[in-house]
Image 1 (cartoon, rainbow over the protein chains, first blue to last red):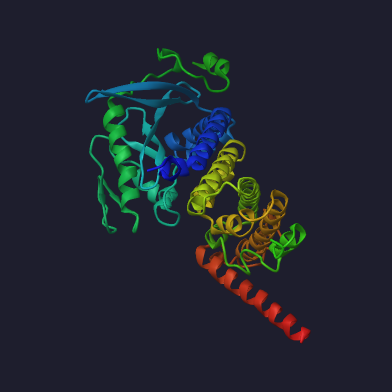
Image 2: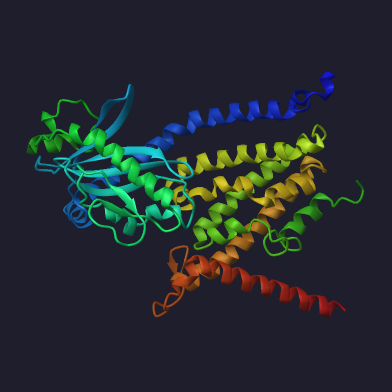
Length: 230
Length: 205
């Protein structure tokens, strides 16, 4: 076979373009990646009060012009020889009482990676809320994991039991009703929550003032103000 | 290539005579999906315009190097690159909007409108004509999206771009914002465009 007829030689333009475009995209990712990451952190910070306190209390807190003290730390989990890292946000009321934790979790969904925020109470015993940070599930089907009605099912579920997905509307305790037509998306989210809880729930130490937490952390706004109070 | 339309002809054709949505029925997936509000519709239109013009120009520049059986691969590669750029820029600077649009921005990669223009115009004509063609088609696509979005947002919420245009008494037709509203609106507007066309044709006779 002569060089001219080989498949590789014919595809030189495709290969060249792939290399050029790939390099250009890598450059753009390097430039914009941090900005996108900052956007996500900003959104996470905005969602934490709702996740640990619930809508009403969070609105009340905001109306009083107060904010939770939020510190983030990284929890390292060793399992089956692999190490997984979770970002955990601990939240305290302005008076210094611990109200809960928010764990950032991710895993494979039907279409792409799903990123979740799981809100837990101070002891890590029950789920206080679930928020979907990022997803690319099928619009109209899997994307229903975004809807309050479905996410709400996770509220007040115990973290000690394994959640299972059921079809039909007979969801009991420890059961999550699947979105019709999107069983895989439903199972993915529930699976991510299960894994995360199994890995992290035991590692949430409760401290009733932000300063006792030894892990150095990223600080939220107005750290000085909170220090005076506690 | 004497029978190929010129740049100006290409540009004008894209806006109405060959409007991508109303005349060619291309790119209907985003048309149906993101027209429940004016803002997502316009963001989509601008993203498509960016991808369309860039892809057209690049394909036109390399048109003499294309191997016929590999051209679709090259089209897709080029389009995917610009779509990724658009997606990342939106995520960085219009974060909430990029969340609203969700997977529809990445889905521009398979928008048949763009492949169609690469095939019909860009792979045959010079970059200037290709750019004019891209602009015209993008403008036509934007106008189509805007017209559908305007009808759906006004009837569905009584507001346009977040401003109230119908009196508060208006009972919001929620169905217009939901997926069925997209089909109903597109169908009726398509019928209207065809009707006007038909009348003009008759008047000419």
